Image 1 (cartoon, rainbow, N blue to C red):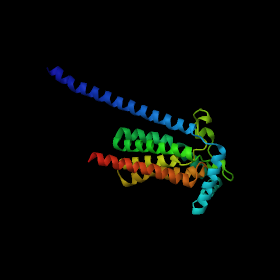
Image 2 (cartoon, rainbow, N blue to C red):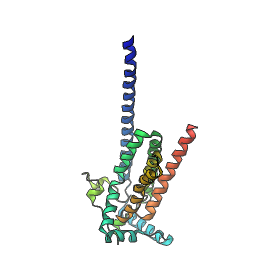
Image 3 (cartoon, one colour):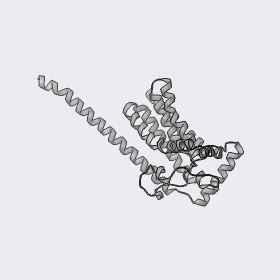
Image 4 (tube, rainbow, N blue to C red):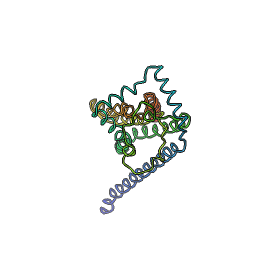
Length: 246
């Protein structure tokens, strides 16, 4: 009888381990499926170069009319100072997908509530993004006169060898480079303790916001719109989770 009683905790531990493994497998599969839909959809809805250029010209005119055409000033600062250019390039490449994956891992392991809030906000905003990429194909600044693309194609692909044809060249509006990095940093900060640590967790969001402009990849309105869409869904799913838990 004592031997049987001693096996009970072991059986419970094994079952818990199996459940945890199943949770990880399920979530990785869900993320991979969503990524396939999102990136595949981006390629399918790619607009024409002519339409994308016209939309970019209109966006630049709109920015001038409301006084937010800061792209030339920010990029010139990067071109004049090598350290600023390098910092922008590194932020653009490594503080988006690599950082998102790290934060998703940390939150799934330590804070499932924040993880689901972030994941669902990314899924929902990505769906809106696919609609906008279809409706408003947009040439990024680096394709427009007077701008320079400072990030190489190899770095843009994180040095993975896949064809450039697998990307949408004209998916500049909105910028989820900014939006998703912002909400990932917000989710991470909310799961941490200590004011200084939380502010530090938000730093990548600001760096990426500047980097997408200094590298010639997005306009200011791209960044603002991506941040607003992602943050709106992040807030929505946070409030929804709170109301369901009451």
